[in-house]
Amino acid sequence: MAEANTPGLKTSRLKDRPLSPHLQIYKPMLTMTMSIVHRITGGALYFGVLLLVWWLIAAAIGPNAYAALQWFMETWLGRLILFGYTWALIHHMLGGMRHLIWDMGYGFGANEREWLAAATLVGSIVFTILLWIVGYLIMGGIR
Amino acid sequence: MSDRAPQSIRTPLGRVRYLGSARSGTKAFWRQRMTAVANVPLTIAAIVIVMSLLGRNHAAVVQILGSTPVAIIMLLFILSSVYHMRIGMQVIIEDYVHDDLLKFIALMGNTFFSVAVGLAAVFAILKLSFGL
Image (tube, rainbow over all chains, first blue to last red; front, side, top):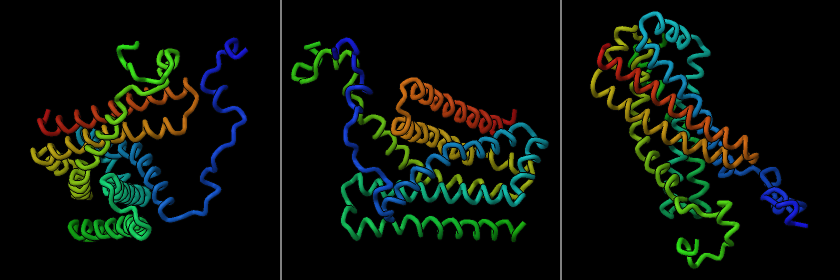
């Protein structure tokens, strides 16, 4: 009987078995949220790299192509995307450092976990804002 | 078969269907960590470089991006990032896409996207640097 159906992965393993509880069953916690945000920022950066590629290609093509990019980056939407992009980069970077600490076997204690998760979130926001303040100061004011 | 894994408890059928270890499981893990470490200084440098482009005209931007140290940093950043993001997206696809056909299409598309993005960026940087 079983041979006749040639059970693959789907039929043999996933049929009417009790499933382990998934995300919606748990109370949202900071560590869990930061883990999810790490994946979301990673996915966003995956497509966000197109912005950088546009930048480089526009500069390589010539003044007209670059003018189009520059116009977009000067709009509030362009600046917002750029700001979000730097935040995602920094958040993903700090989250990655957290993972590297865990990879080496440190930071698994209850307080350490919470502290690392909070540091990732607060650090990413503070660093991003500081970076933009410094950036605007170098550029000589808001423009 | 028996010469490859004499102590395996897996059945010959399981081995034929590739339902088990390919003995390269840590390769992607290690390379993800390696590119992650490389990306820390490279990302900071790239952010500073890109912010220095804001508000500058095309000629100035070409001069900045085309200068040798900036071009080298940007090339390293792009190559390390593209490799890192390909591994990351592969993990996401493997986690969420369970239909075989869709999964293979997504995995292939992931490689195509990463390679295309990387090559386009590298070409642009080299063009700016060599001034062609």
